[in-house]
Amino acid sequence: LAALALAATQALAYSGDMTYYTPGLGACGKQNSASDHIVALAPAQYGHDANPNKAKVCGRKISIHYGGKTATATVVDKCPGCASGSIDVSPAVFKQLAPLDKGRVKVTWGY
Image (cartoon, rainbow, N blue to C red; front, side, top):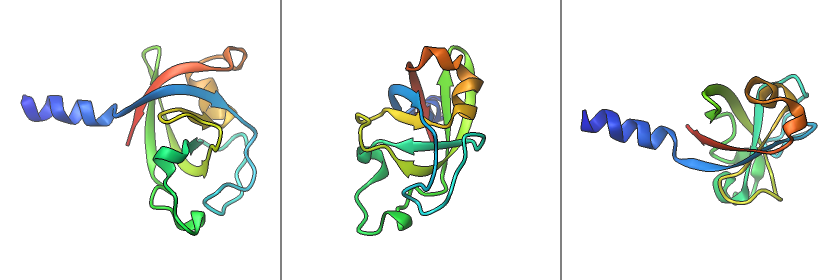
């Protein structure tokens, strides 16, 4: 039971604001669109690799939790303006969790 509680804690390792943006060429070096299920991480979580295309987080999937709903997104970009724990997602991901007119919501997320 303790191991299960620890796993649940690790799965929700981060919390912060979630906003959405119009994706293009991401820091991981790939072109993305608004319909892709993608996420940009804050610099603190993305890391500071000399070549951002080779960052260890590129291609990792995260689970995002808000209002009893969960969405999955793939890390493809860095959000330079995001505070630690905050994320920027594609409109497709945002709409899975909240209406776009909310603009910014508090979420928890983890790998």
